[in-house]
Image (tube, rainbow, N blue to C red; front, side):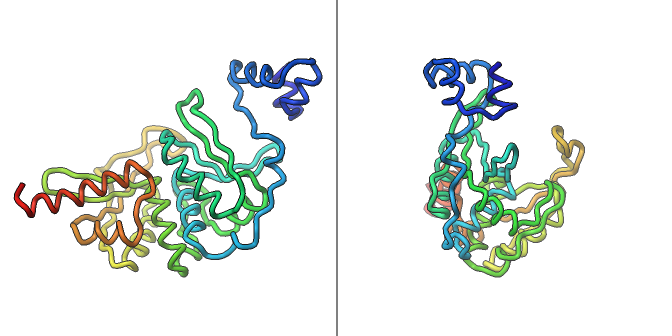
Length: 266
């Protein structure tokens, strides 16, 4: 009965509660116990995107970068949203704030769910349609950097920050310190390399140890890596692009601090 009303007929939890003369919180509890993901309240679906959100800002670039990484655009059952599912609650909060600054709307957040992930979503058909109009990403293997990120400095910085928050990591092994970003799309990484070069960061793109994905739709696809290291490049990344992901930001700070320690001979 819950499946029929909540999923198939798209009744709200309040409508179901009214039909059976029970508390709405009881309906929500039973839906969670049955393993259903709770939809946001109905008022989320009428949100309008302000005109200022269409300006080429850092926040717009960051959202695009996340969409090209761990985020995605979602549309089903008349629900349109910009989504991020992440194991990092802290990064989820950061993305929530950036979505809110960009759109002047209040995103929805929930979790962790049974898969251990937190969800942040900006539910707005206008926001969904505007972001979709800017992207060229059709799948993990076939994407190009959006034109607005190539031509607008603020958007470019935000895009790289969002993309590396999703797909990048900080590495330190002995005296080697670098940042790497991964994708099955080699041509896409060459475009990331071009953006890095435009802010004076030198990088390389290569096959990542001949590794292949072992999961999902792109199982057996080769994984490529954009890589850059050295104190100068890492400092340029921090000051011109920067991680917003809290743990990655801390890792980069620690790596850069280690240069100072080594120079002091400690």
